[in-house]
Length: 262
Ligand code: FES
Image 1 (cartoon, helix red, strand yellow):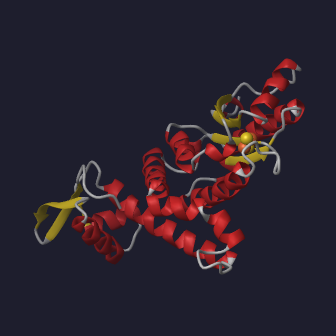
Image 2 (image 1 turned 180 degrees about the vertical axis):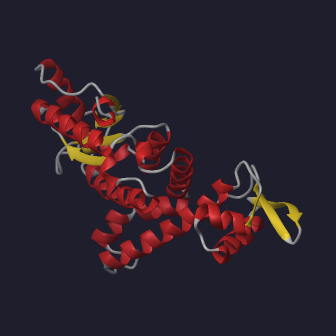
Image 3 (image 1 turned 90 degrees about the vertical axis):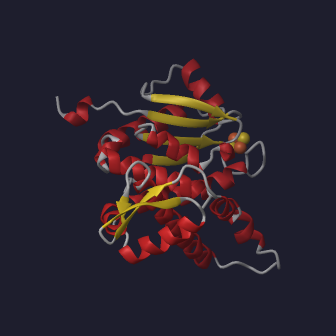
């Protein structure tokens, strides 16, 4: 038996209470067959699923995540699923950026009467994840964990939450002055900001349980030494890192427990 055949992926589904969870229920009652790899978390609306939660699930070792909600226009809270779609598209780009295959996350819609569609969707997704292999095929385990932690912390940062969560209003209704926001420009700004936050958190996580010099951090994180130093100076001012000791002429940094947030 090949490794791919013996691989049983861990799949997590966030299902909205009003449509998809009922659809899953119908699949069970109607005895539609689907893989048993899925574990379900029921949420009141798909719009309640925070991207940081998805990253947490990957940190715990989940190989694939499916978010199911009501069809567009049918959300019981009117617009929850539109937010889900935008947020998760952003998250897929972030996953790609950190080296995790974005296909490991899907968003789809299943109504309460679509038991068969639910079963087919879970079957296809499970097959896809088996093809992709375990999450640790994407990156070595330690590297994977550090990158996911850094991405989660970047997306949990207040400014990033604002940017990701306000996207729908900003693009559809314009900014506070009522001016139309250009979609391409907005995405460019958003991903630049996310990349910067990710970089900061990547540096911070690299010195969570070891002391490293600027050069060593640069080597571990593949961030240019100049950028590492710039970030460390800013983080030192915020009380997030400190110089632990000096080796020759090289200061070695470590992370501090408390301090101001990024
Ligand atoms: S209630 Fe189902 S997606 Fe919002």
